[in-house]
Length: 394
Ligand SMILES: C[S@@+](CC[C@H](N)C(=O)[O-])C[C@H]1O[C@@H](n2cnc3c(N)ncnc32)[C@H](O)[C@@H]1O
Image 1 (cartoon, helix red, strand yellow):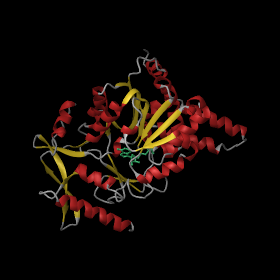
Image 2 (tube, protein in one colour):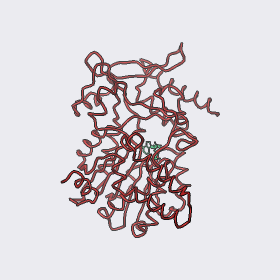
Image 3 (spheres, protein in one colour):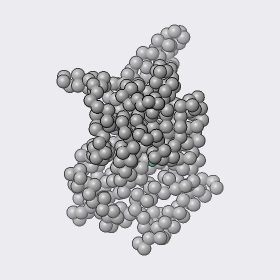
Image 4 (cartoon, protein in one colour):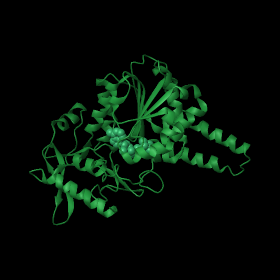
């Protein structure tokens, strides 16, 4: 099947799903789930390049290996507190093309061989396409990587670090609207005459949607649209329960609830990416474009507390990377350039640009947040927190 045929096949499947409903509609959640994950036809499941220059979007990993190297520094600080009899464990979820894992493992092998030798790096990725590329990108670390299909396959008790970058923003969400003084849901149906999908507002499909905002003291303004990511809650509960001792490090773009649902974000945060152009229309390029929403970090923290996870650090990506030594790589590469007598310092300039992109507020530095939660590790005097306290004169 060519691109158009695949797209039509996916549209037919979505219309078929609608026809099974007496009202001929599905929730936005079901629509987004099919558009992204329908077997072989959804955006993430089909054989199609997604991340990088010739694809649809960049992640921090695409900017350069310096992102993974800096994350490796953070892992090296956390892992000693999680050591079990066997060694060290990291689980990365939604690792995409596996380049971030490769950059982390390269750095560990180069600078922390003691940890690297005892490290098992688990990968859990739902996209068969990405899983294949991961095998290729991680071929030099193959003795350290284990692919799993479910968190249940991890050793029990699991002690280590559970990590993700831009996983939660890819979960399908429910879309809601405050109308006539109450919360209602946005459904999707097929407009036969116009041959397009259209949105319909009706009662909530699920009572968890009603309690979601109440639990977080959020009241939307009349007419305000917002997304509710119930899968994010479920995910945090699953990984939090699985983790016996260690840390969960979650990087994604988003805000605390109060800021995410502020009235100026009147239309919600659905964003789509197609050939590096952003748009807010999830009903075009179906199965060919990424669909994402901003993450509610308050919800992740609240659920975390219910499964005995304690938030130890919630910060911007910029602060996280600076604190974990990203600028040292600039110095390192400048020295290397001098040794190689590279007068124009091409490599150094490239890394300089990458670092700026990762930490500058207007680019990836501020919208991206990092949440670090811990469980059963005890009270540690973390270097990164001491640095934070020093900043605030504590
Ligand atoms: C935006 S990409 C992130 C890519 C990568 N982490 C990076 O930094 O380049 C999201 C990835 O999460 C995967 N994914 C989505 N839901 C998942 C789930 N429930 N478990 C594991 N992976 C999932 C998708 O298939 C996709 O590869």
